[in-house]
Image: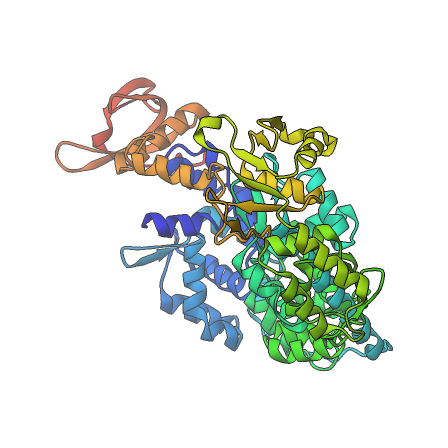
Length: 610
């Protein structure tokens, strides 16, 4: 197998990669009972049926032919699904290293066949039951009012979309730090909980949903909004939901999607779980945990209400996402493109704002409350933020006039004008090299304002120091200093070395996630195998491995030895040691010690039972 093929196969199995030194360790690990049980538990019914049929027909060496397999499936009266997909099913089993394909032969390792056969008819169905067709589908009948459930589902879905959008926006404004042990830092988690109006313990689920949808990405030790997240935030709410539910659907195995889609009429929670149990009869803890997570996510996405799946859930599972998007969107509150501007400098949206209008408004106003009717607040600091990002007093006023149902109140017009007039009273730029180790320079024509900045305790973290009547220096980067002054509500602007105003946006996007630097046990294992640290994987090496294992276990073996004339002879030997290409063992029949070169040994086998 190539490195890529082996990596793909090992990624489907469970074993302790750190304890594997060579190919023989790997073989033993993959054939260990725990590893085999884990692999079998993840096989669906068709795969189990084929593996059971192979285990029944395999010869002493585990070999079988395609004709023998087809005949056995005919005897078991296998379903058309299995017969039609037989080639793909066998290939899947080979990819999971449960059968071995090579040199034109196919074999099932004895431990695999033995482990499966011992469970058939016990905690697993019989081979015939596994090969049978799916049970007939009966439409469940219940007294649940699906109309009410559908309405509640739409409400839950809209709330999830809104909360996810707030999380993505919050990460775009201020990234969240990843802890060394994994997870977001507590201060960032609290900030995101406040931004999304959710409980602190719900933030990890909300973040995971955004991560799986590709809406956030890692940049070094920080998480921030991705390019995809920035584009997603400008989509209508139903389209945002469609992206989230598409990721949910991708986690459902294709075979289960087909099974769920078969059901007619309504789909109940018990019927869904019955389908899963039927399809994965060997499933254990992984299946329970997977079902629980799928169910929790389905509740959040409006596919399930109070544990009962809605009809839209089956539409999603069947892959008709456009239809599902239209159905769920019909229950969303309609977006609005007009707002009420108040004399108290608040902006009230009578419904969810169109995404593009919401994004523009947030550039120079702060969100105070989000609900079906959201409230924004315009302040001198928020207007200054907008001016720093490239807005002007004229562009802000024109935009407000275009969306206002009540005109632009005089207090709001005055605030925008005054903020524009004061904008740039404080300037931040990169400090010249002569001021090293300072990295940022702050200047203002107002010496009194410079003095205020110097003694402002909210800015103490910047470690500002005076460098003239109109100038301060800081060891922090200019953008850090700029946003600290902006958050402290000073009329700050960024400038270049020539004094030209720079337009800064706090909103950051990560183009691509940076791969984690943690060690990959599987990659380390493949490197060890490629380097041959454990020695070459030859016939002699495997023979020595078997003899060493017998010596440790104090077992007796039948050892077939090649004689000088070309004949072979069998000896009943108890291996004592293997060294320098020679075996030292006790001959049980002659009761003498023998030393044999490994090159003379043709085969070894367990000693016959007494």
